[in-house]
Length: 613
Image (cartoon, rainbow, N blue to C red):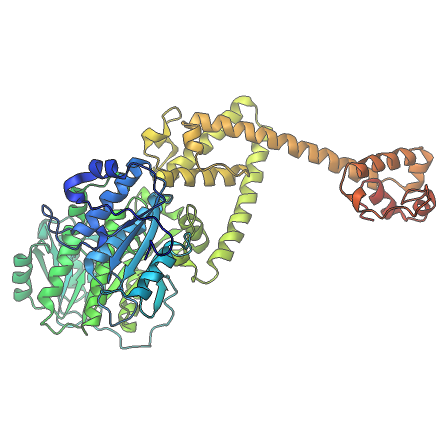
């Protein structure tokens, strides 16, 4: 189909696990316009890491190798039945991992990543034509499911609705909370105990030795619930089965998981395995071991990183996207399931600590635990399958999310684009005016310190450091961990601050904070001179406009002003558009008689070159 539509296709058969990253990079050397990967269809387990599949590992290695090879080709991954476009479809958990990985790659390697296309199990000619259409779309859509009925673009939309549209969930009997001694597990355990759960079973790897476990047990007991704290690794199927037999649950809340952060190009198979253990393997075991039980709720805690992607959290996003797919599979089978992709929790959640400001700058605000569990109850009442719950500063989130590439994903969020534009314009003008005023008033040394501090603070925020001290003035940005993603963001932030569009390669063209500060000083000095020149012109115009016409005539200045106006007219395009004199007439378009007929305002306007006739 690609050949039929004009492409020259070279088929490359590779085993990414055997070749490894370096071997793939060598195979990819050369000139390509695009790379279409079918590695993402291989759902066999990884030979050394059975928790992973070849589809995910192959996609990660291929993207890393393509970056290493320096190719300018766009990389597209094709999956099969990885996502659901209707409630009846059962998405592949392995394919969902690939989609989670792809969303992270899109943010970290925006110039390399093309997108994701999902095909049905047996694609016909129409599906393949639609695949070609997506590939030729020049980035118009980058997450597409192709079916016989059409092509579907992925969108994040407001959940809508309100409490009261369904039956409220009321905890009863024994409720299992995995990761129950952690911050998020503790909050939901309090909510369960306070709403009627007679027995709450909390699991963690350390059991009663987990920090804060004794205090949490006492607190839940005061709310009227009996509490069992069990040391159980939910990735261990046999241990989990024994726990479920000992304490048969009426509901499951799977909050266990291992957070992960790190640049995509540094992601290893071992690192992915650590993330997938408790989160994915535990969810899979819970699903299989409870299918014969009568559950009121089966709740999976996931993350926004799996819904919209997150730079530096590619593996974590992939693991969470897998849980979303599991929830959809259960619903397609007629079983209860709700996957909630959380934003930032306060009260000991991921929103606390030094990373809070880093995430807040990207539009993710911290939620109070009370509001979060209230939203949890609403999601269960509405019978949501996959829903995101986050406190978003939408304008800021949209600016951050689309800073490197457009994304149709968030296009349906009401007013995001317009609000983002208004917010960016207003904030940008205020920031640049304040900075320029301080720069102009400062001396040479103070100017240098002002801009160096600006560069270091913005770079620290982008890299996730708590303070500017995390960015030494003379250390190369490359050594600090800058990627193409973070480089573009720093350039955008500094550009808004100084009121000048800066190239995305700023931190590579000027490799230290000192060098960038010196470059910005030159730009601001030029802006300061321009502002001073415009200010002088405005003062002259104001002074002339304040002079009475008789005073100009009496002082003999009128002829000079008119002469200056004529010179100004000849240097502009307005002279060319003025009507020509009648044939045989030597008078200019504005005769002295006509000038005498002008009132004061019109005369001053003409003298200052503002007449359009």
